[in-house]
Picture 1 (spheres, each protein chain N blue to C red):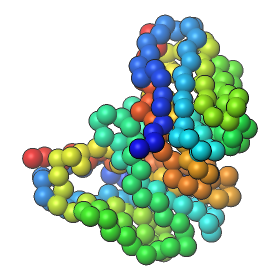
Picture 2: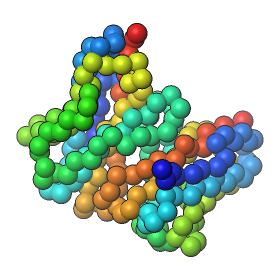
Picture 3: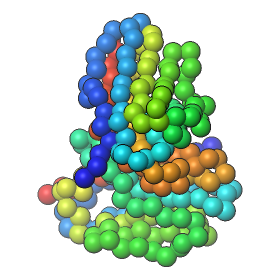
Picture 4: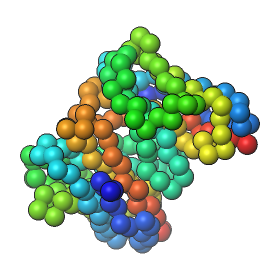
Length: 115
Length: 113
């Protein structure tokens, strides 16, 4: 079973639009960590955020915000006022404490911001 | 800013040949990971080291793949013999510990002809 599901394979938005990338995870652990990574065309994965299962507080960092809801097992990522430089593949990942903290990546969402 | 170094960046080889990839993690990072990423998919963990010890290699095809981190610092991933299906991006990542975020290197793009 897929532990991390990113149902949106590709998204295209026009510059300055807001966009939300969905992430749904599956775990039986009570202690786990959620992550978002960005992979631009250059290929290198860039860490964006880490969240632990005990902290459901939403976070905002500039134009980026994350909505963590344990009730729906979701950890969604919103980019406000998108820019062309946001074009990349975005990966959500789960790390379970019980499984030795192995990372499980989703299949990624490819975001294209059209100027 | 500290970075994870990988070499080579690109490798083209013929099937049945041997290839090796090298990774130098961020200084002080005890945990090192090797991933394989096929185009259009998310990274798949091949092996995880804690210092010089392997803590997870359940997804490593051990008949042809091997990995080592002899002194608990840099690491080498080897494929022998390479097969056409091994064409992918091989990513190395490191972290201070297994519950921390991972920092990725630029990857090695392998093409097997």
